[in-house]
Amino acid sequence: MIEDVKTNELYSFRFWGVFLVLSLLYVILYYITNTYVYTGEFYETLLHGTVDEERITKTIEMRQHFLWISYVAQPLLLLLRCVIFSGAIYTGAMLSGPAIEYKNCLRIVILAEMVTFLSTLIKISCFLLLPSLSPKSFQYFFPLSVTQLMNINTIPKYFIYPLSQLNLFEVAYWVLLAMGVKYFSQQKWGQALKTVASTYGALLLVWIVVIIFISLQFS
View (cartoon, rainbow, N blue to C red):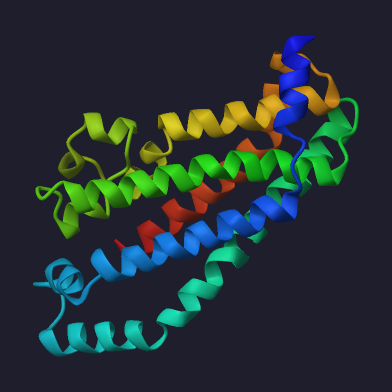
């Protein structure tokens, strides 16, 4: 009973209020990232030896010219993830048991998205605080993932991203989704996890396959 009351308080927020706050946090974080991480020196170090200096300069200039688009894209990408994942959970819950209102699916997803923001925040903070983390190693740096226990240089590049998804943040994301499904549909934990696996898990698997395919095309 006490657990139900606490969970009810957890989901008593308005989706759009949390969405606006999280969108603002993403924009601020992206501003910090562009100012202190993705600098001209960052790209010069990252691209050195792969393309000529003129191409590097043009890349940096073009990025600065279209930088404003990245700030607009942050709320749009967040909204897109919420809409797609919520739609999947809504459909999955309707097919597997008691239906969940779509607005509640949005609440479930936006709460889990805080984990994604936290993982991004930690990754950026590590780059700023750890001088040993170079731009080339930063692109393959995924906090609290199994890749941190492995030698990246021995792993095929197309396999790095799938392995990076085996991390504690992803586990927390699944747990939060399952917790929301369990609360709103009154399912048991096992059934709630199955719903998440058949919806969000399926979408994640498709995304990973797409990333592998793209990586193979450019490798």
